[in-house]
Length: 390
Image 1 (cartoon, one colour):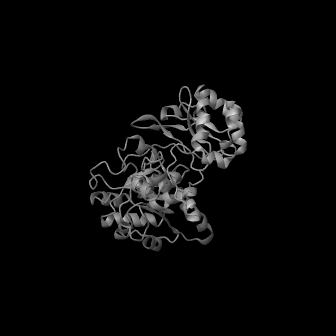
Image 2: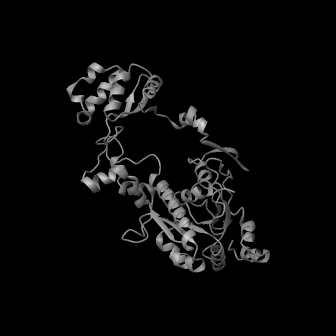
Image 3: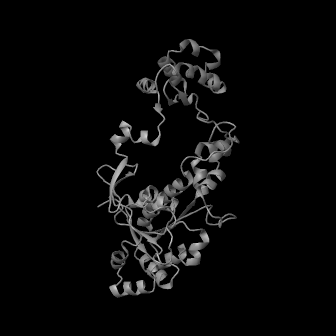
């Protein structure tokens, strides 16, 4: 038995934030039923991109798929019948949509007091922006991330991944697990909700509390760490490396590895505070020496001395790295149409537990079998199909 096998999750999510949330549950064995609109209702590819593309395959794995038209009375009635037997429902509609469909928390709780509803929105379930459409890059801008990303003076820069989407999904999954744990004591479910904006502000972490506690407005620091010196990107004779060496002891180790004792005797570099004040001078002293040898040489030398240091990889180099190969982060999955594909395995490891490796299903692939599991008779399923509710 996988850790979450006892929980049934009805997945109404689309695009990325919601599917990311549900994937955390599916990867540890939850019985996840992905609910999509029938092709007769949704004739396009649907939201989330090409269903056989890398993104869709990675985010919707380990689920089963049924089609259900929630806008049709029979389809909505079938969904409500499933809710009565489920543990979790997850959605990322705009806040008003679920109420319009009649699937808000109060309505679902009336059917099943044990149900946990997980909701992700763009800006929150209420407030002046609640009905605005949410998008990752908008949240990156409004949450402060773009203001601290990029080179000094460059102007706002988006992060290279959808940070707000991904973290909203992770926070919602954590909240759902918390609610399920609480339910073991209370016997009742709970509504768990977060938003792209809330997740993005929370992910700003120490940069956010620099403002809330000290009134400091963080600025762009480029490849340098905003507060820890010297920590940043440095050129070598054949590429670039990252060095993280804040604090007096790390500085002494860096000086020793580079053999720059004479240069480090500069009074402007004598203390952490002075090195921070004279960041450009500090980096220049290191840079002059680092360009005399290869990236591999310095990575080995610094790590041997206990100084965090690593290469800067493109994605092909990431998956060619010895440690990444050892960890098995490229995760082979057998797909009936695509053959063997490599996804990215869950980053957590539970000793003795192997996550399932079920490929992303085709739309409606499991409609009949899932409905039968929920007690629908064959003639009921035929009627739903005839009425285009499934």
